[in-house]
Length: 132
Image 1 (cartoon, rainbow, N blue to C red):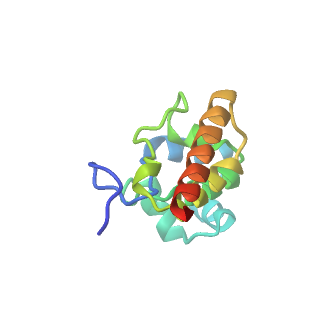
Image 2: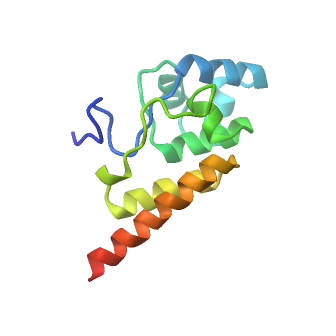
Image 3: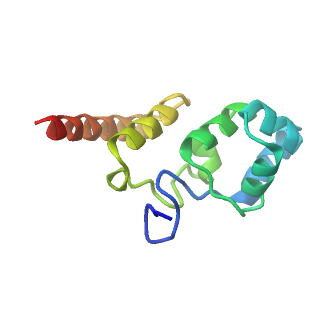
């Protein structure tokens, strides 16, 4: 298995506070099955994410956030700071762009928007360097 960082996570994955995810879901009054259906994933996979067994890719987290009607950053932790930062340098350009596109679909705080724009600039520069 190829990992994206020293924690053993797959590329493009991000660690979340599983207990917080469960609290947010319950606060919204949803069952695991309802969130899974809205996020277009299986209930089993959602349950594994919520239990901390599986660590999802950002695109899946974006769908879960949308299903819960919350921002992606609120799934990550209380302050919206990544517990395990996504290292775009470890991804292929296409993986990085897909990850950034998933993040861009979420409401962003000004700081998050600035970071996203910086990451997109990096991706564009990298694409340009590859085509040279």
